[in-house]
Image 1: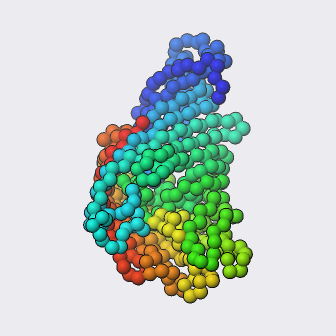
Image 2: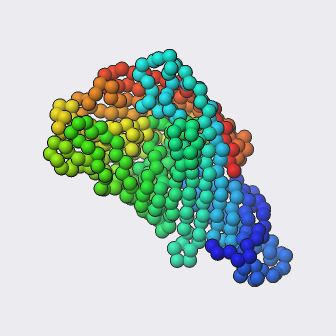
Image 3: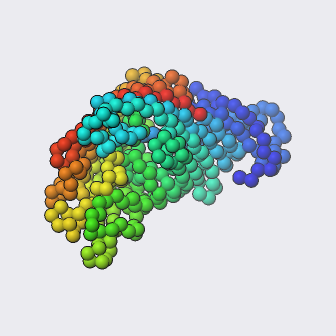
Length: 439
């Protein structure tokens, strides 16, 4: 937006008895708009109120909720005619954690990384972490030809080694006419299928991972039925052995879903998802490239039992889909050499299930959540190595207290376990408290 004489026309909080979201709205005028502005004070006040309410409404209409999604920005810059609106926001998040009777060697509670053997070094651990603090910008352009165009960019501070606080790009995408292009949470993830946790990664059967993509979504039946299809940049994590080598990938992952929503404000839904993969690698013995087909299916959803109680769930089964199961991301288990013939390679079967409930004791003020999650790798022609991951469990319980609209306190207990193919197992416990202030 090319601004001539740009100035703040009004700085006010949008007043509304029926809406909780009350941003500060700064109105901007172009030179043309400023020249045409002489009018009565009553007319000015009326137009101010309309612009403020329209800006607030467009940000509410484009707000995406769900697992670890950011709130709407507290400050919005908008043009007088609301053709353009830009919001800037974020939050400061501090988590303090204490591991006991087994410590996870990760900033998050990842069952895959629970040590099997207890030593003097992994019995206890304390951490203070602010790397999940976030900054974001959200722009909405009301185009006469394209309709609403949404551009969103956000970042946190997890770009380097643990506690390095290097900036990291989380999302950067543009959405219009049902298309989303850029970097966003994978299409295979159902953002409404898990409650918010103090632990940043969340249940190990969930799949809150980011991908670079081109996605199309379309709603039918008055938004009760939604279809989605995407092409996403593949991330392959396999065990190659001595007879195979990694090469560049050639085919994008293809996730897709069908979702049906019902109830008041469509608070309940069920989603069926699938993902197709074609993973390329080089066969050293034959001196040629080959590929492995990976696939996965998922059933997920959220059900509002009543005003106070909400249930969440997801279940996944597939082969070679480690990027789509939280605990297995980067584990090297998309495929392994065949244990019975090292000259052959095979995809690894795996599944995961998560179930949770949230009780809003005092709506918008006090809530408690709890749940159970398990991820498992099944044998295929035996197992590749005795210390290979077989199963991980994740049990959590938390309480969230919203002191004000912008300030949240939370506490959480986590228990996790890991079991290997040779039946050796380990466990860990974590207590965390969290303070978050939105701006």
